Length: 294
Image (cartoon, rainbow, N blue to C red; front, side, top):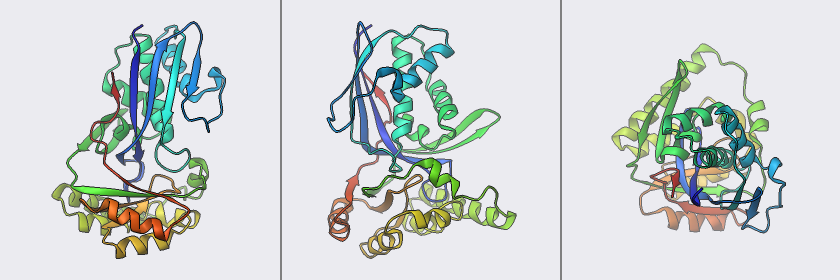
């Protein structure tokens, strides 16, 4: 087996009112160097991450699951792992790890998986495509599962900057999902869908001011999750005063994300860092390519 490298971006799911269907690939990455070995070893380049026995490692479990699905024996590998995607912050760390695990099995077992195969496997494991799809394809991806087929539209030419506000606290997706209602009244669902439709149309037209405004009027999840997000109203208000188009919860939170005018991301991030001294405030590029393998 020849050595190979896997690079998977972070992602922001839900993207305003695009609940479980719309996600954006971001310029934070999980990178793996994989070589053949006599035994399984996962080496963390970030010394703050504890060493995990390989059979307990999430990426190994995914790789083994995919290999078993194809009735293949997964050969032992040495995996050197580096990531600047924070865990349990709403930036798609689990989706990045899932895709990495799928790709290790694909390369090590010579499965010949297509992009559609990887999308389907990842969505089955994750439960929804809004992190998996952008992490795989890059850009903003809008997805829907119809009769077990994942239909998607990819938008790669968004003329915006992204600013993220990452608090020190974690928020598990399971806890954030529990607070959501199990069903919605028809009138609310119709109104929420209308908001989502206008956001997509505005993004396609390049009307980011309107898109940002409508993103802040989500009815599917933000009204319920806002109480779980530190400084929710403060961040939205301060970002708006600094010319952000709109500010939303990233994924299930607790990170929040602003779409801002192109070229202004770093300046806005610097000013917001002063407002939020205990946060990591970052100006990020949109990752245009998604997962790459060399």
